[in-house]
Length: 344
Image (cartoon, helix red, strand yellow):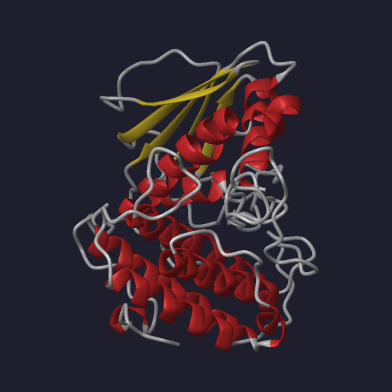
């Protein structure tokens, strides 16, 4: 995705999170057991500030977080973090060097993408907490997010922090799982169209200023260069953009508003192969090409991203699930386990 589009989506989801959270901070978040909306807002605000400081200082801030953050009002912290983050983005180009937890990409563009994806997942948390109808996730942002979680949070993380994945992979006989994104049946904005207007989000400016509760951004050592004093949002840190329950949902169903048809064309697809040595994820080209797999997960980009991050709505029995899961149950269980490990 282009920089301007990612910043547009970031602005929209920041505003949506703020609007929904403003209706009540004490609501419990079903997708983050033990969290309230206030915890989610505080987490996102701290993540924004952390990435702003990484760009400003040119290194991982240590110690982190600053003590004064703990007493700051959650929405004020969110606003301040968003303002600091977008200010730092505005001063840098996509390819400007910047420390990240992804070895092959040490640029500012990595954080622009990561923060856009961080924001959409956590605004879903606020919507789920308040039983609000989730705002649609634009197809281009959802497809980018699907690629990110599979390629970075599972395949790359399993290679970079293998100790975290030993329990999940040591006993595997090896599986192949195909993940298919299908064109939504209902008309949706094309990738080049403006992001969906989430109330006041369409007018949000990129320059607008604005973890378990006990330790929202405390990292954990993973035997790598980005342990607790490095990036608290990395897959190995124990406090990334996923909740403690990410990937742990036992339901394959999502919202009642199913929008995936059995005949909907496949617009993007990935093949994941597991072995005791790690995980390999390949983006399939063309996506509709026939590829043998032990199991297949299919859905529209919006619903598929939510399924991978375990942000489904309460399942219903009177409509067809927008996510279809077929094939080897052990392969699907393994996928869920890897998602849990990678996104914790």
